Image 1 (tube, rainbow over the protein chains, first blue to last red):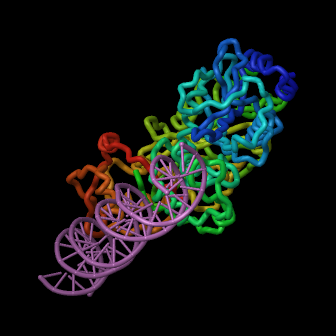
Image 2 (cartoon, rainbow over the protein chains, first blue to last red):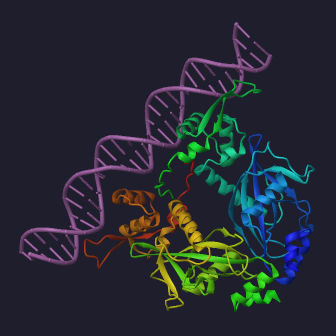
Image 3 (cartoon, helix red, strand yellow):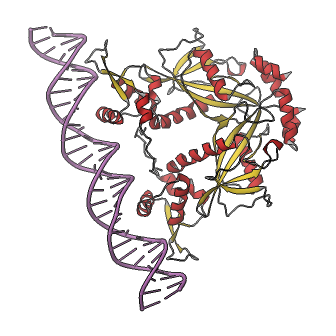
Length: 243
Length: 243
DNA sequence: TGTAATTCCGTTCCCGTTACACAATATAAA
DNA sequence: TTTATATTGTGTAACGGGAACGGAATTACA
């Protein structure tokens, strides 16, 4: 029975072969997991285990079980790979070209996740699972360059409309770190003073009375993101027509 | 063979039953087709043909053929139902909850389409295919209320970042019509003079030297949207952080 | 003690958004 | 023919947020 094959998924290749011979479309989920380290935006990728993609890197994905929602599937993958739960995760969109998967017709739903890179435990500590710069032209399998690019652009827009960026930082962070984060995601340079002014005026940060340490210069104050303040703030109508 | 069943799709119900018994996840496309008429935003829906949803309305959708891309499937549906090609069509996102389809596990990819409601020819002229106000609490099948709502919100954001709205209007339109369109989509009231000023400053409209007729008041000038002007305009970097 | 690096605060200028009023033009009714 | 009514079309002043920018204070380190 194909059903059981799909559920146990001990061997994805076998399932794919089965899908192909039956002419059925498979459904998978791919997670674009972003992290922030060394003032750079990173993405978590794994060495591909398909012969066709020897040596190439792949996003973390899996076939969707028939008794789990799409979101659940994405969470499962995230949990399996990073050991983390309670993380930011959102669907971006589906990729379903006929030719995108060499083994069978597989439609994949791309998810974007943001995690604190210091707080996770990778399940595989060998070099099969690694963080890579997103800006680097990495050699990727499938249509994953396209998916990664779409998710990065999605993040660039999203991070300017909602305060997601904090998921990438430790709980307490300096304003400098926050700015570095935005600069890395948006790939622009920002003015220090205006950035600071802007964020304070939004009234989202709580001043912990602590300071940075181990920095070779004057330490900055540490802040925490206050999600309640964000929620209580009534959302302004957007009315620009901004083409 | 399941493969042939999927391809001919003479009887969707049979295919769904087959999918269920095999425990396979099906994949479909649903089109949210918007139109603009009588100063209101309308959506094209069809009477559901499933017993479970007797009398309810449904979005236009179909199972994806195994040899067509997702976009192609959406175009096919659009063409079949409205007879139109060369229309605006874009993927919004996937909906794939386990329980969303009563007959089988089906993941659907939602597409948003904008068409000129006066320019199409509905393939079914009986009352099975009808335009409905989006604001009205329509009795819908499946999770289509959720899908419609998501697409409407998506459109509200999208229409402020890109000049899509013109797809809903005739080639030549008055500024009043354009404003009514935006007011209908965004569900707000706008200032006539500022709206006019804003659009002219964007330099996207060509002045046809024609005027409205058959209006019981002073006729307004008619304009055309100039897509080339839009393309040639270099896109400004957005840099707001607008939470 | 001085130098280098960074934090932190504040001001000005500019431009886009908002709010608002009045004349011109067409139709329909008196 | 005149009058009332509805809508188009234009201009301007006040406001507010964003961009550009300088300088004093604080800490580490040589």
